[in-house]
Length: 223
Picture (cartoon, rainbow, N blue to C red):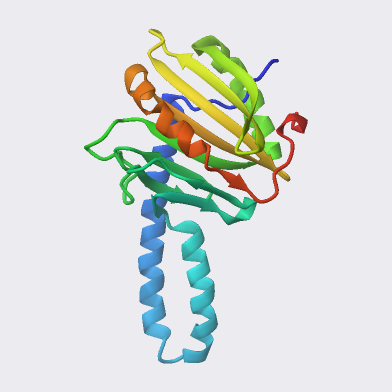
């Protein structure tokens, strides 16, 4: 089976974190500005603001990074998972980043304590998923060695597992799980250096074993 699905490398994690830092800073600034504008206009447009507040709250909930602890839920695909005990992170739109070290809500950096491994959950449109699979497939072939490449059934859900060993000294490991729901693909990835990865792998896999999807579809049909 030839399986060239997207794999998260160190550079991708760094790029993702940098993007989150920049975007969070901009969103927090806009949020502060919007609160100021709301306070000025409230006394003049009380009833109108009732509707505006609802719209503003929905916008903030979608676009402000949220702290993650214990569970992660994505209602857009009916996805729910229990996170490894003690791991914390942030959720920004359709990307969640979780670590035993925790992830700072304000800047996306890992905390000072705890193992430096990353769990990433992302929801992609099928078209975006196929584009990324094509773009990253050739790059990953040269950098990584495939340890496992197979279809799996987890918690009665059919998915795919890709397990890689990467880096010049083969000291970095990545495992990605892929599940489908309608026109979406759910990616659950785990990345770390050799020994730290190994010591946390069971915790990650136990977390993946708790996932649920309201309307799962066949990952094998996404090509």
